[in-house]
Length: 308
Image 1 (tube, rainbow, N blue to C red):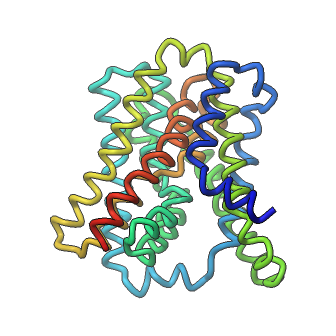
Image 2: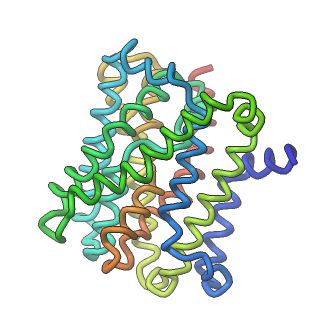
């Protein structure tokens, strides 16, 4: 079982890509995985994330506030503004623009800490940024979506706030509590959690892509191009800010990865819960989930050589 889980984790990007391709080409095969499952599935991933965290991880925010705050400012400015700019440049349809903006306004991705580690970056900074951006997400994500997309569609700020509390903060908190009460059990299952998260994220991607297969045949290449540019530009600008502020290569690497990798599962969940009338709004998040795992694996090789 451990070997199987190790293989699943190792080939996460390949597995997610293959399932996305299958859902796109043969939607009926995976159509039984419903988009209504996205929110509870993401909650399961967040619960698993809580099981892997320590309360000491959040102390990074207080032990090195300057670095973490710089990183979070980059997180909640670069990606949202890039989302708006790319939507405007490529003249995206409204529902796709909403989806891209949702991705841009979300906190850091759940796998960013692993990619930072593989990149030989500052893992402590990465964990601190993930923790702070996740804590701030219930407040900042709805407000940013309201400011950037409120002229296109009605945005229920309070509803989104409660949704993020429900799907992010509550599951992570429960994970921390379970780890505290049952440390031995938690320790025994921790090594299986990356494989579990891979399977659940794959299910989210399958649900969204299969439900929107027909629309993707019409505008798939366009939204894929925008998602790739969004992600790569986030890496580049995040690293550029670190260099401009004369941070170490390891710190610049951590900021780059944290900015470029978004919690795109949350974007899918918010799209399904609050913009259900815009069917394609969840698609950018699903594509981002596929792509940033591929780009993360590639960029970690580049950074690891530079930071050696």
